Image (cartoon, rainbow, N blue to C red; front, side, top):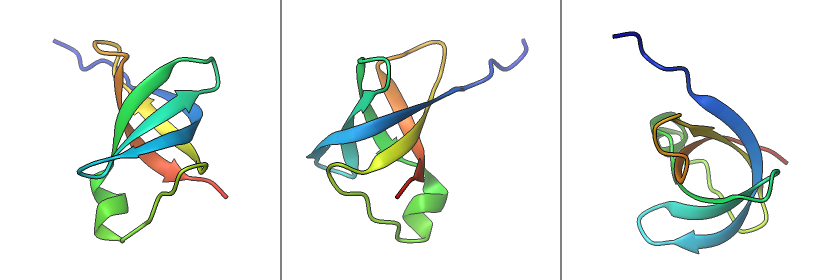
Length: 72
């Protein structure tokens, strides 16, 4: 089986949830629950409400994602 490619979308952090989980509103209006990627966690990158982020989504579950980049 071939591995499906992850979708990358831009969004804004709406809410901070426990355990480094965030509620992110994507640019198309959908709201997803996202956690921080391992490299961001390792480098102590802080994410606050209102930050613009890039979220990776799998084609299998579009309601959960992984934050891979924090914009300015």
